[in-house]
Length: 169
Image (cartoon, rainbow, N blue to C red; front, side, top):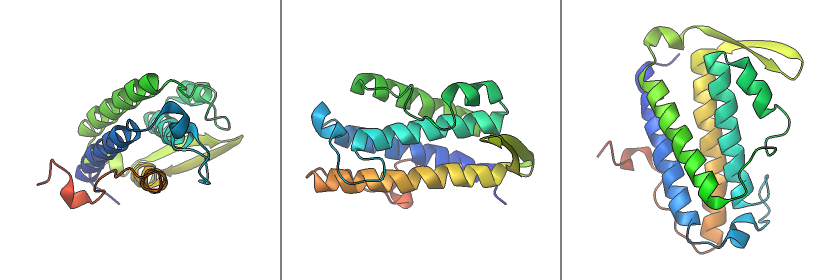
């Protein structure tokens, strides 16, 4: 389905976009980041926390680390979500580095293997490459919501275009 180069590129894009949104959200007060803005997860902070949670879940699934997936919790993404903005930024940066390093170590053979994971009480098996595409696409979708909320708050989060990523130009 995909090659390791896709995963490596998307890990870099993910980090760039997360950094861009964090820098934009830094211009808001804490109350403004948590303000309900009509998005699916409510606020900028809640949406960013959802992306953080989702990246943790999918990384754990891809690695076969079911203990981590259970600890994160399949139905309660905010049980361990950081309320403190500095803590969120630290966790986001650490996870972005972890994902980038992990993707750099993948092989093309990894892309064609299957991954077994749990959806609630049901065992599921999906392709590794398929899961990666989903993880990155899902994050892009929700970052788009954050981008819109920031724009509505009068903050310009910057470009989201892949060809504009600093490492590609």
